[in-house]
Amino acid sequence: MTSNGASKGMPTDQTERLVAQADRLIAAMESIADKSGIRIATVEERQQKQRRIVLALGISFAMTFVMLIAVLLIGVGMRQQARDIERIQDRVTGEVLCPLYQQFINADTPKAREAAKRTGQDMEVRDRAFTVIRQGYKTLDCENVSVIRK
Image 1 (tube, rainbow, N blue to C red):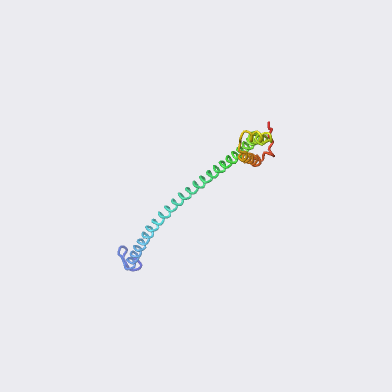
Image 2 (cartoon, rainbow, N blue to C red):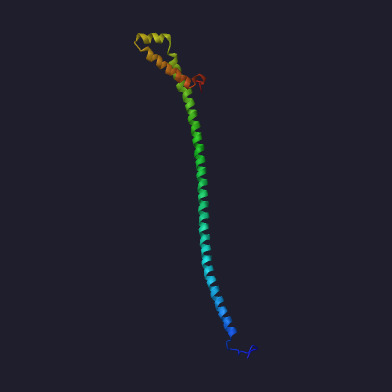
């Protein structure tokens, strides 16, 4: 017998209550463990999803940066081409068009007008043509273009 009056192997009310409480506690702990396992799995799934999102964002930022660099390089190339085209246009204007327009303007002399009248040219049409030539000469700014270049 023990000091509380029960034999060593025999259950008592107190023992039964402790066993019942232990069973309830074990059941509660199992329930919490089950729920926490679900929550832990959910947290792990969320972490994996967030890692994928961060990776996708990193890749998209890198691609955006690469595209930005490509656009900048294309822009620089286009700017250089525009300068080249302008340089070529200036050269064509100075070496070809302005001298040609100057020859046309120089051809409008009183002697040439008399010859045109004798051959039956329409003088109004001729005057309009020379007006257009003079306007073109001014539009190309041929007065300020150096014709002789080497």
